Structure formats: structure tokens, C-alpha cells
Image (cartoon, rainbow, N blue to C red; front, side):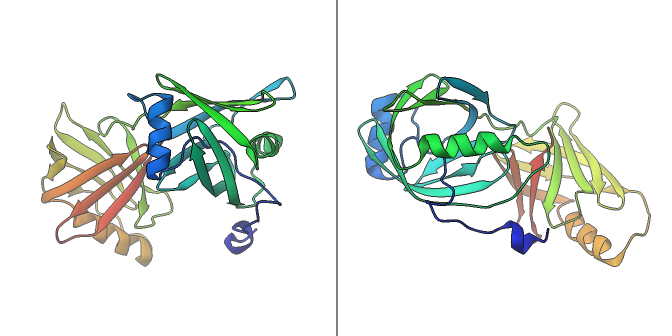
Length: 257
């Protein structure tokens, strides 16, 4: 199935999105505070744990999550990605104008997505925050349970480079204790000194192997090499790492589980 066909968008009537508590508007922020002032609902990535509907509880697949910010609710059912508008009145949340991709994923419980969408679409949900836990409840008593997602640590995580595209071959692992970074540039292996301080990483000159690969891979490898022998800013947003240098490329990578 080509990518164009995979990314079909649907109207809310066709496939509705789940799990939203509190929107990212000012009104939503107030609702988040009423649910738990010290642990707001908005601006947080929540992992979906389970959905209970018709007295049956189903465990969520790995990767199911949602984030609410600035009047939008976005996330993944585990296979398909979704987006929706949400309105908030106190601790009540309503989703509308839901859109979703339509993909069939192997080894993913597609029935779970249908139940989750049906449970949360076009009805009011009550949000309750208890520490790192969020529960969304319909008026009939069906529930979606979620847990606050923590950011992956910079050090010790294998970060697979997604930008530039290297077909998943490029990856980097930082070791703050040793003061090093090592991995692959897509074709050649690399290691260098790496000092992490105040949201930035100072990288030393890279030591690499000297293999030759296809031209496109070598071009991306040269772009990655421009990160080294200088200082780059870094930011971790849940499972995504962004490295930004003043004169080089912006590199993005995702944490391998």
C-alpha cells in the first residue's frame, strides 16, 4: 500500500478519535487546573493504558497516546493517527471534527481502535487527574485510562535518526558518564567526545570508519557529520530528540524501545 493511500483522512462520522481531556485553550487550561492544579491535563503527552466499554476492558497497544494543546487534541490509536477539536467546560470535555488516517497495521488490535473511537466520540467526557493518571469517563460509565508519558533520557537511549532520512540506519547513543557519543551515520560507524551541559552538547571531532555506500546515503551522512566538532542545542520531547546547530542541519531522531 503506497503512502498516499495510507494517509486517507476521514470525517468524524467515519472514524472518530479517542481520548481527549481538556483542550489547549485558556478555558481548557482552567479545566485542567480544576482536575488537578499541580498536574494539568493540557500540554502533556498521555499514553493510553486501556478502554472499558460495555463492561469489557481492553488493553491499549504500544504507541497509543494523545496530547492536548492550543485547542487541538492529537495522537495515535496505536496504529492510526488522529486529530480533533475539543471544547472544555469545567471538567467536561467534548470532541468534535475528528479526523484519522486509515491504515491496517500488522500485530495491532484494530478492534481496540474501533471501541476507543466509539467510546469517546460525540459525547461529553469527565476528566479526573490523580498524580500521573488520567481517567476520562462517559455519562454511561465507559472509561479510558491514561498515564503521563515521561521524556526518554538523552543518555543511554539509542536515538534512530529520522531527519535526514537514512532508512533507519543512522543512530546515536550518548553516554554522559563517559562523555561520549557513538553509533552509525547510516553507512559508517562514528564515535566522538560529547559533553552535555545546560541544554547543549559539545561534540568533538568524529572518528569514523571509511566505507562507501550509495550516493544518497553518503549525502545524508555528510550532513550528519556537520554536527560534530562544535556545540549543538538539544531538546527531548517524549520520544523525539532534536539537535540544532548554528551552521549545520537540524537533526531529529526517535528513541528505540
